[in-house]
Amino acid sequence: MAANGVIHAVDLHKRFGAVQALRGVDLTVAQGEIMGLLGHNGAGKTTLVDILSTLMPPTAGTASVAGFDVTGNPEEVRRRIGVTGQFASLDEQLSGHDNLVLVARLCGASRAQAGSRADELLEAFGLRDAGRRKSVTYSGGMRRRLDLALGLVGHPEILFLDEPTVGLDPPSRIGLWEMVEELTRGGTTVLLTTQYLEEADRLADRITVLEAGRVLVTGTAAELKSRVGSGSISFRLEPHGDPAVAADALSGAGFPPGARTARGELTVPAGGSADLATVIRVLDTVGQNVTEIRHSEPSLDDVYLALTGAESREPAPAGPPHRESPPTGRRYTGNPQETM
Ligand SMILES: Nc1ncnc2c1ncn2[C@@H]1O[C@H](COP(=O)(O)OP(=O)(O)OP(=O)(O)O)[C@@H](O)[C@H]1O
Ligand SMILES: [Mg+2]
Image (cartoon, rainbow, N blue to C red; front, side, top):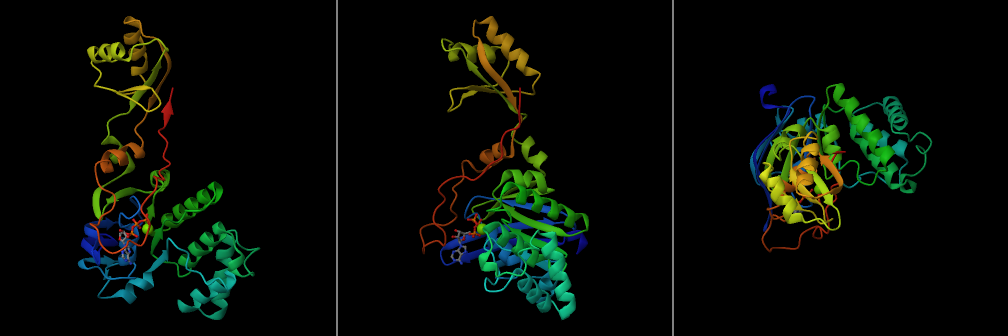
């Protein structure tokens, strides 16, 4: 089992009617690792998590979690995992405390053990004061935190987090990241789906990019970033500058072809900030002055664009209505790390 990873999926397929949600997904997550699963709306992230957490069987392929087959031995798998879904699964009519006690009792804890585990988790998630009121009165962020706490009741070895920080304010998001990091220091393995590049960059040891039900790439954030080169230099010419003259001069100096951005800037691929001075000097020799210039490291966003740009987003041909409405926009918030 160890050689294969704590989570090990081979050639998973999942079909919903005419919708091919997963089309041959392989995934291996090692003990104590945080694997980030990144993908557009409809890429198949929740479907993969649902299969691995035994909520639904795959149409084809196999998967094991903690060494147990997810379809052959689902109860053994369930005993070892915690799941926080994309949509909170708490009982709104119960208080936070009673939700936690209920789950702890289902995990086999005595009444006293369940009560103290509930209090411990309420404290850890900043919900002590709200713990005795009905969770229907909780804010979105409080529900998310309670939902995560519910996933941790049974001290799971493996944690599945499906978009755990959606709807959290920045301090709560950071608090949750710290909690996840703390858990993995204790040996917990985490599979986390996210649409926030920043989150994947910060938390994940490795990232798997899913697109239309397939794995596009798996690697560390640094490995993924290295696939899109070493960054770029962007600059703006004085109003009477001539972009064509600037481009010719840079090409003559050995820079690869650049581009013009939507903001009217010119960009050229560049090795590092040391190239800033070269660009300024080359442009100066042809009478082109820059008013603004900066070097940008490649971001995970660049990687994502480079990998998914040409692919279609929705995996299915026309078929029965999809569960979600089509994506209306990208939610990726990773900013290029800019240096001057
Ligand atoms: N129960 C279902 N019935 C029919 N189609 C489904 C069902 N569940 C998922 N799908 C479809 O499978 C595809 C993958 O969906 P999934 O929910 O796994 O995507 P996702 O990556 O989690 O997206 P999001 O970022 O929006 O949560 C989508 O086309 C979706 O419409
Ligand atoms: Mg989802």
